[in-house]
Image (cartoon, rainbow, N blue to C red; front, top):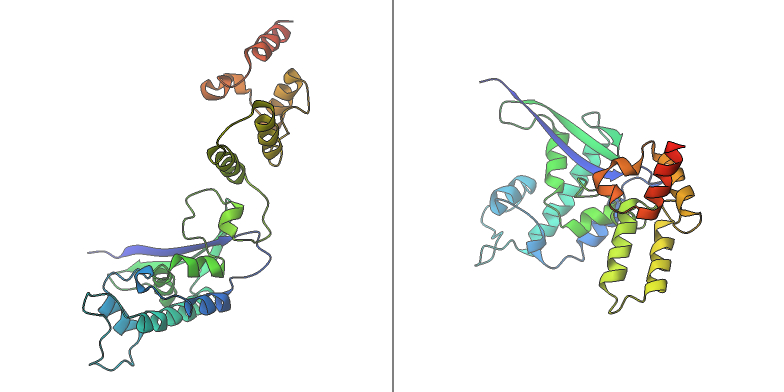
Amino acid sequence: MGASMLTATIAFPAESTEPPNFDRGRQLLEEITDASLFTFDEPEAELEKLLPDLDDECDLVDENGEVLIEYARRAGLVIINNLEEALNSREATFLTVAGYRLYISGGPSNGDNPTNATQGIWDAYKLPESVLLAMGFIPDYELPLSRMNSRGASMPLTDTDVVDAIALGLGTSPQWPGTDTLKWSAEAIGKVRDEPGNAEPIGYLKRWSERYGFDPLSSTFLSAYVNEGVDEVDEEESED
């Protein structure tokens, strides 16, 4: 059987002015009191591998099979140390895509780990999510990067942020007074787009088309949101 190509990745905001803060992760690790926040698939085997100096007779789990927090923290500290070493080693590199810095390691494998760095990155996901976030990493990087994901890093607002803000604003308001609701929604949109209301409707439509390189009226989805009056004016001017 031929070797398989295995890779491991972990994401960090590309525009962050600071590197991953491993010390912050170590500090937060000491505050974790719930061992269930760690995601060990085979707790005893994984802990024994991460903590090879343990007494063979010590109990790593309680009577319910839950990892004892003392050992979970000790293993977490090893994981953080290994991750820091991995990302600073020649076995790992990174690429920048969609606002993320994706650290990556890997290689051909016949069932073993292709590199120590690969295992170091894989193991990082055994940590509580709050610890990963504290260090600046983004566990779920399939979604567009947002200020929320960057956890306070100096990042520009994104479309995702604004949609989240509007959804929260509407969802947590018992009433939607028309003018006020439209005003703050438009102001929120103005953080990532030309603010609605700052130009005549037909002018806004034209600026939008020029900025994004296509006519929104050609989109079935977008055209449903363009006011019919603007649609008619645009058609008349096209005929002229």
